[in-house]
Structures are given as C-alpha cells and as structure tokens.
Image 1 (cartoon, rainbow, N blue to C red):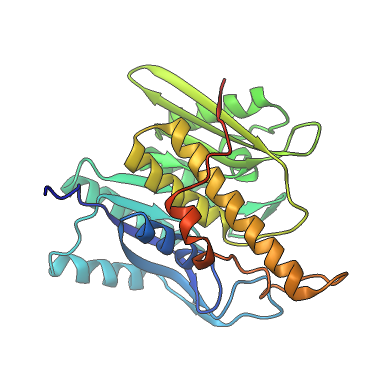
Image 2 (image 1 turned 120 degrees about the vertical axis):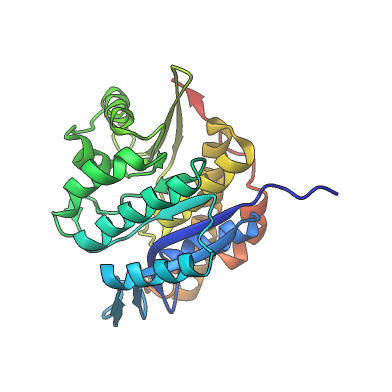
Length: 301
C-alpha cells in the first residue's frame, strides 16, 4: 500500500502549561488529521493571559536561532508547512521571516500559513513595531494568511464596515503576496452575526466565499489558533478553499458550543464561568475535528 504525502508542520507560536491556546490549540487537531507537528514556543506561560495572573518564559530571537540551528545540523529541518501565530517581539518575528525564506530555498513547495496575531476588538496586544514587519517581511513570503477583522484593518488601512470593504481589503493583501486570504471573523452585518470570508487567486482567477453564523454570548480563547490549524489541514487534504472553509467553521462551532455548554454546567445557573471552565474542549471534540459536521455552506461571492 502506497504511503501518503509527507505532512510535516513546523508550528511557531505561544504555548501554555494548562489550557488550550497557541501550539496547545493547534498541534492536537493537526495530529488528529494526520500531520506530524514540530513546535517552537514563542512564549511558555502557566496559562493564558485572561486569568488573574500568568507566569512563564519568553523566547528571544537568539533562542529561536539556536533551536533552528539544532534542527539544521541534525538534518531534521524538512517541513511541508510552516504555521505561525502569536509572536511578541520584532526581532523574533524578523528571525521567523529569515527561517521561512531559508526553508523555502530548501523546499520551494513549502506552504507558509501565517496567522498575524496582533489584536482584536480594537486593541493591539503586541508592540506596534510588529505591524511593519508583518507588512514588509511576512506577507511577501506567506502563502496563506488568516487575520481577524481588526488585523485585516491594521494590515491594509481599510476600515471594514461592509462585505465590499472586506473584499477590497483581501485584494490588497493578495497584492502583498499571499495567494489565499481568510478573514477568520468579522462583524459588520446588521444582525450582529459573524462572517468569515475566504479569497484565493489561482491561474489569474479570484474565488471568494462567505460563511455566516450566529455569535455565542461568550469569549473564547485559542479559537484563532484552532482556526488556522484546521484551515491548513483541510486545504492540504482537500485542495478546495470552499470545502476547507466549511469544515474549519464547522469544527470551530462544534468545539465552542461543546465548551460553552460544559462551562455553563460547571458554573451553575446564574454564575459566570471562570477562565478555567471556558478552556476549549479540544480532546472531547476529537470526532468533530476528524469528521466535521456538514452544517455550513460557503456562498460564492
């Protein structure tokens, strides 16, 4: 029996000891879907920053270079994909760009999936100097980008208040390098629902798709990391943006609904769930990750 293609992901983003964000949120679904995952943790915290406190360590660019050197010297730096998420310093992000360029020289078919984690809900939670690095050094070498609405606005300078604005912003991002642009979440519809949009340019043709779904009245952490990982996996497996978007959204919605129901049960009637109770129910959602329910239809625009 012939073996399938090698699917090895180098994932560079944050991690936590307890809970699910960053690499903890991305590695499990990728592994379940048949990918080997090698992780470099840009930060390692006890828990995500939404708790009353967090403690841990932050990798610097020299630490990253040291780890990469170790991979190279041992001949174990061959990857089919690179996935990046939260990165907290300019020098670290610049080193990531160097590593991506180097790996693409060795493997021109390598796919770089970038989730440009900078902020949300109108607030930056990384230093402002990372923005020009994303624009000038990361976007030109990225194949797929998965920003949220706030991040798209920062990267393009366009305020998104309509579908037309979002499409124009995606065109600008395409012009900077990425062949595939997916806005993981945006809110501009009159009913307050969430809209996810995906655009790809291939052979001179542009395909754009939209999925719209209702927002749950809760805040979830680690969902963007899960989104980027699932999108990477399904784009690789199905080679179909429409299908990948549908499966990714279905997976996300299954996970957060399961998480919310359990959190409410643990908190009890009338009580607000704690951050620990709101940690994503990833392992419990293994079946939905492997076979996402067929409940969303991406509409072509």
